Length: 244
Image (cartoon, rainbow, N blue to C red; front, side, top):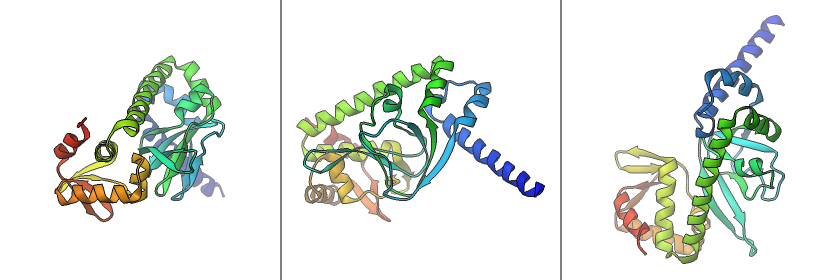
């Protein structure tokens, strides 16, 4: 029995070490010193979710801050006509719910997994404790809030005035920035992007998204491999994305 307890303890220690390594890679926590992690590590918890599961819903109390360990999560807003608008797609090392947790306001978006996902969670009370104990974290939060606000403003502006070709080009480039891997054929977006996902992300219909993607494909700007989009000529998409 002692041997089993020892093995279990060692496994827990390895898990905690892995979680710390993931969280340390997040810019929000990069300013912490080596000695600070003895205080942070016990506050981390790991969870797994299957594809299409919900981490939280728009309007839920902001009880938990999430760091994505593995997999990808999309952030949704629900419109009055019942449609979902995909605001962002986040992959490993990205934060979820930090704005709501920091403000104490309900989650303003819904977080839904796009594949099997593992996350690291920090309870809101523990997170606020860390902000008070380590003021450098508060400054990092303010910087992240500013970045998120700029992204949200850009998206609102794009949905209001941009042509659909520009919106789709910008969406593909944004996904490639955070979820892209260079290959011999181009920059592969490392997620299975369905037609519905792309339509929701750009505020258009599935039919229109299919038509625009087909046009990009015929022009040789993109291709598809194993269900993933590969950007072959990013400079051409940049030209479309920057058209007014």
